Image (cartoon, rainbow, N blue to C red):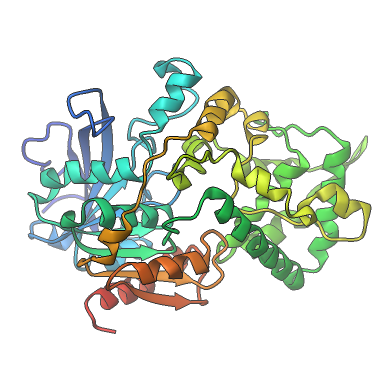
Length: 448
C-alpha cells in the first residue's frame, strides 16, 4: 500500500511526469510540447503543464477523461488540495486533466519578466496573438492523443474556459465526447464595444443592489474616493491607488459572496494618523492583493483581444464605452450627492500605468489594442450542425457574461441544453459545486 507522501509510478514513456498523493487523489504532473503557432507545426514550440487527477481508489481503472479549462483569460488551472469543490463530483466518473492554458501557471508563462525574451513591444504583441481560444483548442487537440490514446474527452469550461469550449465545438468537435459550460457562453458576433455597452448597465445594477444591502457603504465609498482624488496613494508594492483603480474593486460584485467581502473591505478603511485620516495598512494590503496583476498579467494583456474576430480593432473598448456612462465618473458623483459607482470586469490603459506588474508592457498592450487582423473564433455553421452533447449553466444577470448574449448563442448551437438560474452568480461552479456540475452532466445525458 502506498504512503500518502510516496511517489507512485509516472506516465509510461514520459520522463518529466511525476505522480504523488494527496488525500483521496493521485496526481501526476504532465508536460507537453506544442507549436507556438499551430499553422507552423515545425516552427517554435512552447511547453504546457497539466495535472492529471484521479480518485485514489480508482487510480488503476480505465476511466473516461474530463479536461478542465479555467476562466480568465490568464489564470492557471485550480490548484486543488484533495477532492475540493467541483472536482469531488468529477472524480466519481472521470480521470481529470487540469490544464494550465498557454501563457498561464506553469505553461510557458507570459509576463513582464519573460516577454522581453521575445524582443521589443512589437515582437511581444505578435507573440501574444497566439494566446487566444483558437490556439488553446489546438493545444488541447495536440495533447489529447498522448492523454487519452486518441479517444474524445469531456470538456468542462468555466467562464473564459466556456468561450474556449465553444471554439472547440467550432474547430474540432471530433475531439469532444461531451461539453459542459458554466457561465461562459460568448456572443458569436459581438464586437468588444457591444460587450461593454451591455456590461456597464449590469454592473450598475450590481452596485445598486450592494448599496441597498449595505447602505452604510455609500458614504464609506464616497469618503475613500474623495481621499484618493486629493491624495497620492502608493500601495506597498508600488501600485498607484487612483480613484479609478478603487472603483475597479467592483469586480468582486460578480461573485456569490462578493458583496459581503466588499462591505468588509470598506468597513475599516481609515485609521487616525498624525497627519490626519489615512488609509490603513491593512486596507492597503487587501486592496493590493485584489488589484495587482502580478499573478495573471495575461488577463490584462489579452482580455479585450478575446473578442476580436474581424478587421475592427478593440482599441481599449471598455475605456471608450465608459464615456457613454457618465454616472461612473467618481468626481462628478462627489460633486453632487450621487453614490460612487464601482466598475466590473474591464481592463483600461491606465492600469498599465498604475500597476508595476504591467508598466513595462504598456506599449505591447497598445499594439494589441490596435490590431486589425484577428481571426474568427467561432463557426456558426458548424455550431448549427453540432452533434456533441452540450449543456450550459447561464446565470441570470451574470455580471461578467451578458445573459442575452449567452442565450442567443445557446439557440445557435444545435442540441445545446441550458440551465438558467439566479441561484448562483458567475462563480456558481465554485459555490454550487458539486450540484452545478451534477445537473449539467445529467442534462447532457438527457437525465433531466
